[in-house]
Image 1: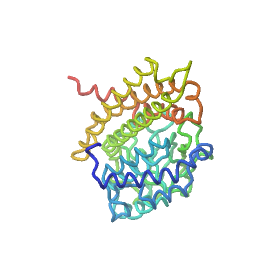
Image 2: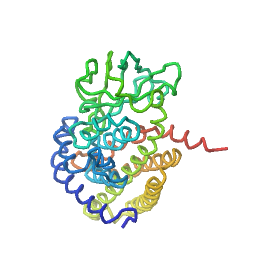
Image 3: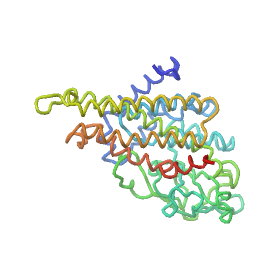
Image 4: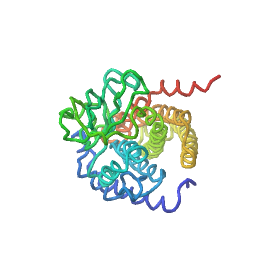
Length: 377
């Protein structure tokens, strides 16, 4: 038993697990072929209380804590789907809750919580990648409106999104100090999505799009927080985003370790179970030991985050360790499955290909190492 969860949390976990088994498992392959999850599924998730778990009831949310968000992340990892819930629930909604005006909160959050509206955040651009300070998308004030021009790429929930928080330069001469966040709704003239989801090697059920902004005019009230403080907001929220990635990575490793143990205990080669070979035992013993250490480490940081919030360095360390371990041990598990590991019929194959982006998204491993090294004297 993990001590960080209460009995109420475990009751919620059972609710989420039943939802995943009922609504996701039978449909996952179809969604992967389509390249996105249907909007009707998001509304079902909203009805089940699976979305935006940390949003207070006054804004239409369940009023849970970060542990509820972790439970949703872990249960999605258990069934092997890479739907864009974390972006919607753990990024877009918190930005609005912490920084948006009361008017904007009451306008957007209830619909995000219900699944009527799907949220996205647009940071990455074709020419800047992880270097957000170098973004070229601009927003120019014109009376009581903002006029946005630019292009974004690799945007999760980009096809389905009903609202996107756009990171843009409101003072192009000020570098990072000139970045703002502005909400843009679907259907706004000049806001164009790519005609179909971007083709990726993994994460096939998670729609990813290019977004284009051609003289997109939005009201001034759509500014999130204060002008030119967008980069500060991004820095403040990135630790939680990275911790969520570590939570997901750990849950995937635990799920696939269990699945691999079951497979090698049943599958025979040359008359013996694969589990009976010393190579198999040693590889799985190492994986079990290291994954157990990772679980203790991540859970301790969840506790820290609940009390005071993890630091930038702590979150960077957690994501770095978790995602590098994810890549290493999923490769081991796939190898132990042999040819069947490469089949789409087995969860390990999907997990292996989906995991590769985790060392890039939310801050590439090299960026995280640079952040950690800044503490050196």
